[in-house]
Structures are given as structure tokens and as C-alpha cells.
Image (cartoon, rainbow, N blue to C red; front, side, top):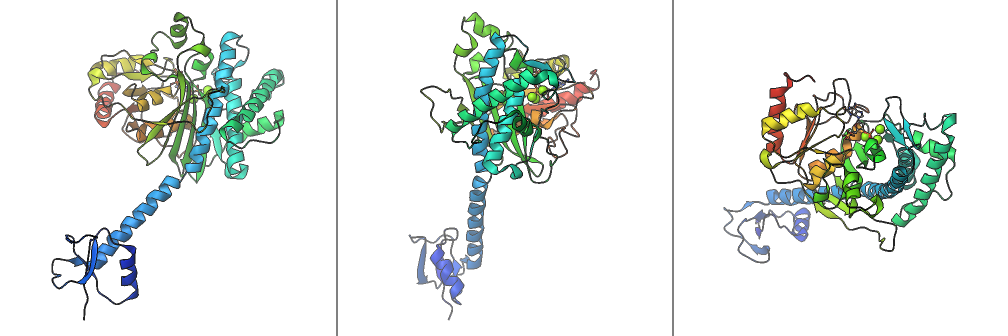
Length: 452
Ligand SMILES: Nc1ncnc2c1ncn2[C@@H]1O[C@H](COP(=O)(O)OS(=O)(=O)O)[C@@H](OP(=O)(O)O)[C@H]1O
Ligand SMILES: [Mg+2]
Ligand SMILES: [Mg+2]
Ligand SMILES: [Mg+2]
């Protein structure tokens, strides 16, 4: 004789599955089972409307697998994210100190690289600190990193003063990292070890397994001018950015202070307050791919109020999709992105607000936080965008609900080396797909008549 059991198809208790696995009973499920609890063990005589139990079991198993996968996903990279966020906090705090010194003292700590771009003790120190903290947390042999700086200029004979300053800064910062619950070397590092930590960041494993991507100071020009800059750390797994952490030590917590048309420093000095006493500023943004969530923590100070873990609040892109109300941000330097091209685009799309010119990946942060709606960068022909200038920002904007592509609407490719290979014209990040489509169409319409 066949015995039927009525069960609620999607809420199948484990005990019933157990029965099925250990007996030869044919069990059926009936979707609209009127009984409460969700199943009954009374034999069902009218089972024509019931769906076959195996389907219900499948559903349950699939649901379980989904839950397991979600759990696994939640756990996946969680230690990496935790360490990366803490390490970026440490880096932000040391950068603030270095920047305050730079702004009040002479500029001898600023060096020029071969391409005439600036590099400072903060760039090298942050690279050494993050390299070291990741190695301490995960074991040096398990950590692949690629980062912007090398030790060429730092190892030159004339640079011994700078190297000394870097070593001092690194050790000071590493000992402070204990307050964030991070592991750090037991003893102070010597110059050789600091140079080794910086040199370690030259991995070439871009599309096999995990590689950390770091821009120790993005927007070094902004940094030396006492303005905006960012510390950008991302984790790429099999060529895909999966974690993004952006430290923005000067990003005001309130949007209205982010007005760069007159220069950040000048705004502060107009108010008569030096950088160190300026309004609440400094935050760390982060996101994990696939979660649909992005977060922001205020930057801590090493004062009485210092408490770790820090509080985080969820951030989201702006809901504005009307170009007339949208704000576009772009690089400060004309040499880094054509202001005339974006001005033409802005006009053709109907943007009315003044562009927000901000140094560094703080632009990505502004979109993710909902403080601006569009970010565009069109470098001159021949310039190749680097992965560390974008990876962290892309994860954060996308998880905050935004869209980032090249000007052809393609996803950025982080798997082919230190450059964003195959990039079509420029980078476009928007708060939503409606704005994004409009910008992409406008680029196509005006590209051929441009001089880019
Ligand atoms: N010529 C040229 N064209 C385009 N991009 C360039 C160029 N030179 C440099 N860079 C890279 O731009 C990074 C800074 O970008 P920003 O958007 O912050 O530009 S700006 O400083 O606001 O003008 C900057 O990052 P950092 O070196 O980390 O500051 C560079 O990687
Ligand atoms: Mg950079
Ligand atoms: Mg940099
Ligand atoms: Mg640089």
C-alpha cells in the first residue's frame, strides 16, 4: 500500500526528509496544505492535486544549497576585508600626519618620478605598511601584491634622508596598528626590511588566484597641495576585483563641505582653521563583491575617543537620474582628463551644475556616497590607465548600486596586468543605468568631432 503525506512544499522539515531517505514510502507534497504546522503525517487519500514529493525535496535541497552558498559567500573574503579595512585606517592616520607636516614645512620630502609625477614619504610608507600588515595577517608566502611604487628613487645615495624618514614613519605606524588589533612585527623594521616590503609589491599574478592591488596614495598631487587624496586597496581574485577599500582622510563627512571649485585648503583657511582643526572629515569606504552593500566608517583619531571596532553605516548611490539635477566630478588636472571634452558632453546631456573637480579616487567615493552622480575621465591618447587607480572604487560604486564601465559600455578588465587593457576611450561611472546610457550615447555622438 502507498502512504501519502501532505507537506508544505518549500518548508520541509529535516525529519521528513530523513523518513523518506530511510523508507520506501512514496511521499507527496500538497502546496496548499491547510494544516498548521506545515506538514501532517495523516495519509492523504486525495492526492491528485499534490505535487510530487521529490520536487519538494529538490526545492528544499536547492534552498539549502543556496543558503549554504550564501553563507559561504558571506564568509568568503571576510577576514581579508576585515584586515584590509583596518590596514587602510592605519594608513590614513599616518598620511594625515605626514600631510600636515608637508603643508606646514618645506617640500623637500616630495620627489619627482621619471614621468615627473610626485612621490612622497607617505606613498612609500603606506606601501610598506600595508605590505607588511597583510604579510603578518596572512603569511608573506600567501600574499601577492601589486602596487604603484618601487624603491628605485628611494635606494639612491642622495635619498638617505628620505629613506630614514620612511623607516621612521613605517615603524611609528606599525606600532599604532596594534590599537586596531592588527598583528605587526615584534621589532622595529630596519631600512632593508622596509625596502623589501615595498619591493614585494610587484606581483605579476593578475588572473590566477588572489592578488592585492594597492595605490598607497592616490592623488599625490592633491596630497602635496594639502587637498584630497585616497588610499586604495582592492583584492582581485581570478582577474575580478572582489574587495574594495578606500581611505579618504580629507573627505568631509558632510557633503556640503565638498566644494572644490575654490580649493579645499582655501575654504579651510577662509574659515580661519588650520587643516588639523577643520570640520569632521575622513572616512573609509569598503565593499565586498556580490553583497549589494557598501559601507562607510568615520576615520578615528588616536585620542581618548579611540574605540575599535568602528561603527559603519551603509552608503548608496544617489537616486537622481535627471541630468539637469546631476553633478559630474572629474580630475583636477587638465593633463589627466580633457576638461573641454567633458564640458561639451555635459552640455549636450543637459547637465547644469558646475563640475566637481576632485583629486584622486575620492571621486569614486563621492559617487558611492551619493554626493555626485557622474564621474568621467578621458585621458589623452596613449595614456594607459592603471588598475590600482580604479579597482577599489569600481567594487564600492557597483555594490553601492552604481555602474562603472569604459566609454564603450564594457566592464573594466583587471585581469591583464597593471594596465586596464582594452579600455575604450575613457571611464564612466554613474549613479544609475539611465544616466549611464545617456552619457555613453553622448560620448559616441561627440567623439569623432573631438580632438582626443
Ligand atoms: N597624464 C595622465 N593622464 C591620466 N592620468 C594620469 C596621468 N598622469 C597620472 N595619472 C594618474 O592619475 C591619477 C590621479 O588621477 P586623478 O583623477 O586624481 O587626477 S587629478 O590629480 O585630479 O588631476 C594618478 O594617481 P597617483 O599617481 O596615485 O596620484 C595617476 O595614476
Ligand atoms: Mg593613483
Ligand atoms: Mg599613487
Ligand atoms: Mg603616483
